[in-house]
Length: 236
Length: 236
Image (tube, rainbow over all chains, first blue to last red; front, side, top):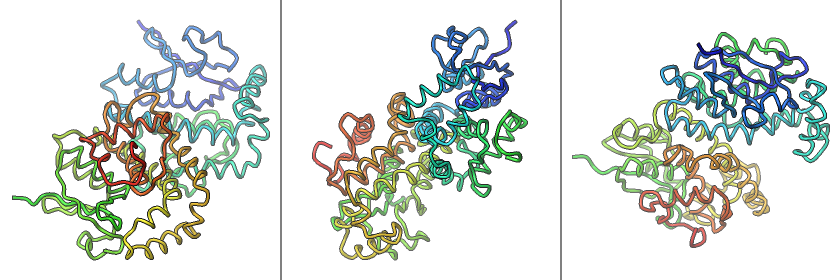
């Protein structure tokens, strides 16, 4: 008998606020494969709680006696472990190109979302995480968090601009992976869930095709993502 | 008996200078499938020469009595026509994600390359194309071509910055499509061939992983792309 799968997920002061973009990628990949999982809230400073994974970041998946960290590796693990369930990659070429989409999300979207919501994150963190977060992020950006955000209207416009390639693609097909979503979609969707979870700002205009795409993913798997604790306005 | 395939390609005053990024995507896709093709030089203002295709842009492929325009559709046509030859997409999901990569190239790289090389293009065009090119591009950019380029060092830096997602991905694998190149690679490579063909500027630093990736694609198919007429410095 195997214990149910466990996913260590970044949480705020509210343990039900699970806002990490990379943890959302893992959550969606698990749902895609139909793998039931128990989420464990984890805070930035609880390094010892995941020391068994040999590194210090979440998501960490523990399943079938195996420990897997890094969201992309978790997706690869699930694809190998459950080859007969709906594919996350659609084959080797699809897996490789999904890696490009993941790199695009990490390099073009992570900074754009971070600059918009970094203060929202700070305010929602468990008090014990706040000094760590401020120190590491101010070092990364080279300025105080308040200065990173600056004019939120400008940051919002930059984020919408950064989504141009996705908007352009949506003229042709409903998901990055075609007729139905798969891992490359989750790589991007995780970024918008991050914003939705921590910030009251509506990141997308209602008539933006990216908004429609996000709606479809919020509805996926019985509304898994829509039902999650968040700060975005109702109806979004 | 079928006539050999024909590809209408944008050319400069020098009919052997074939510089269109989208035509390069088609060229590489044809080589990938091992389809021999005769290139026909075409200029922007020769709309009547490709009127049979029902539209006014190249590439236009004529093969097996069929006419196919639009580089992505040409790749889809080749994939369907030659299912037993090396795949351009690696399946339906790969095809869909390649569409995203193509959208990224069209929206993030086309403007970045265009701003750097638009005057180089103008100078290499057939004289009969020059007024058309200047008028349409100045309307598109909303300023004189000379102003679009502005400081070439800044444009070069912006292009290198725009390639960040590819650079990040190359930490994990040698090509966008994995161990070997396929259509998603050609979507991006076409953009760098465009610059190489028309401009003496070296777009990539020698120690940039993107440079190594471009080298591998220049060498592909017996150096098809490396042997093409170009303006970039020798050894690149």
